[in-house]
Image (cartoon, rainbow, N blue to C red; front, side, top):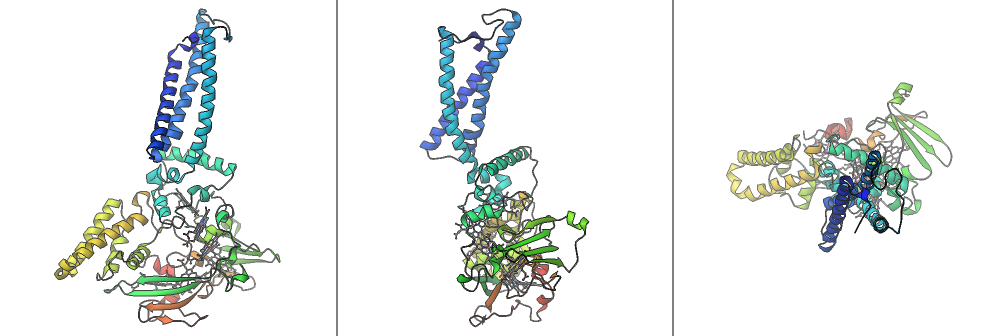
Length: 500
Ligand code: HEC
Ligand code: HEC
Ligand code: HEC
Ligand code: HEC
Ligand code: HEC
Ligand code: HEC
């Protein structure tokens, strides 16, 4: 079979070999992954992104080689095509072959491109692509995601949403991210909040219909105090997520903020931690109320350093899928689940001591947890070590496991890096606004009333719990605080370092 002379050159030849080899590899990997039902993020990366790029590069090299050769021949003034552009003559066997190869090749290539780009689209939208390709970088988010209520919701459903323009936007910023990862030039931790996250109205509300009102929810919090018996202290709350009766819609309760007639705007520091200005607009009556922190008006210069936002789901649910628990929370949960032995004396206390230390790597944390827990029981319970041994070993294993799900030294991520704005115990959360210090001109405050958002219906150590009557709420009792000293501060003032 004969081809035009211009195609006999090293560049075109190399291009053809690279293209053929890539094509072969793509088909081979495709067959392997479908027949064996195995794949993985890296296989996809090669099949849909790296190899097609080489295939395309190879194909581009073929005409480039031919053009260069034509030019060279022209300069030398020799060769059949010298001095003119190639004319296609189907009577010529060489030209016929070349044209045949070119057209059938193009059709095949277009077909493969259509299938390939469809697959590539799906692949780059897949959880495995987002979560595991750059695995060290995305590890914290991916691990937390797998333990979240949204473990089966694709990353792109929240981060990209539907529509071509957001798809393109996300891929453009994705290109920069690939570059940042390849050069090791990415921030650790990844900064939060995300500046260009798509508005929650267009993502969360695709699945959560705000007009479908959530009723009040019963919540049981189990705490274990840092004493010898790991005393269990329960708090039962009725969360006023919705109104007293569902017929009242979003007219009251926590989700009142997303009532279509309500618009709440605020200005905050870039981490959204401090909120000196809040505006509530009643969209039905047009009435506007401005709340100022301690009644102090903002200066023009002060305003420039602040970010303005309209409140949506993510201002409260900022960790719907990547929630990093504090040691207090994950140890309480493991004790409740029975993974940690409640009957091992002092366990809560020693767990808090070893987990609050900052660690440079996961291995050093694992070693430290093992050493310190063992050292503690050797020092204080040496006479009962034989009896305790299995429980100590289990505790060490569980603490290490829980550590790995919530704290990520490589990316410098823990519960403090990404504070959760729901609640008010360990971070200010709702109390960023609801602290009785945001005052309107008419004297109205954004309330911190303990019964505004929930009723405490029972509390105390098991067996001696204080219980409220129906429709009534108890005054909060703080564990180990007979004087009620907690009332002089807000919870997070103490709780951000209670166990440090
Ligand atoms: C239920 C919705 C949802 C899903 C699903 C989701 N995310 Fe997120 N993600 C968010 C929100 C909300 C934020 C925080 C936004 C903020 O505070 O600015 C966030 C933040 C992030 C951040 C920034 C760092 C941080 O933790 O604040 C990264 C990185 C991230 N997500 C990656 C992923 C990956 C990878 C997946 C899939 C494995 C995923 N996300 C799935 C909603 C989601
Ligand atoms: C693709 C659909 C989808 C999207 C998008 C989505 N969610 Fe969800 N979400 C769910 C499902 C399904 C559940 C229920 C999971 C369950 O009960 O097991 C859920 C549960 C929740 C819960 C209750 C969690 C709990 O602990 O009970 C909250 C809060 C929530 N979503 C908030 C959000 C927010 C905020 C966003 C936007 C950032 C969002 N969701 C986006 C599907 C979605
Ligand atoms: C950006 C500021 C801001 C944040 C953050 C905020 N709120 Fe509010 N909230 C307001 C304003 C403003 C009002 C209306 C105050 C008034 O009564 O004039 C309000 C009112 C409420 C009400 C009363 C609604 C009614 O009329 O029945 C509840 C309940 C509530 N918030 C719960 C919460 C909870 C829970 C959180 C945290 C998850 C929270 N808020 C976070 C600004 C905020
Ligand atoms: C003012 C803060 C705030 C805003 C804004 C907000 N939520 Fe909530 N939401 C809460 C709180 C607090 C709870 C109760 C949480 C709990 O018990 O842990 C809750 C509960 C939920 C639940 C679980 C309900 C249940 O009974 O299980 C879902 C789902 C949810 N929110 C979705 C959303 C969506 C979607 C949006 C935006 C359209 C939104 N929320 C806006 C504070 C808020
Ligand atoms: C603006 C709304 C709001 C106000 C005001 C408020 N809380 Fe809460 N509180 C919450 C939310 C939301 C949660 C649930 C947090 C979560 O989902 O983890 C919570 C949780 C709690 C818990 C359970 C904590 C745990 O982890 O076991 C206690 C106890 C509590 N609040 C006490 C109080 C007391 C005491 C006051 C008055 C000083 C108060 N709250 C005022 C919104 C509020
Ligand atoms: C003056 C500091 C201070 C304030 C304010 C404070 N706490 Fe505490 N809290 C502590 C200390 C210290 C502990 C450890 C308990 C112990 O030593 O027994 C604790 C423990 C707790 C526990 C049990 C913790 C666990 O490990 O499971 C809960 C629940 C709790 N506090 C809730 C609250 C709530 C809710 C508020 C706000 C209304 C609050 N605290 C305000 C100091 C404080």
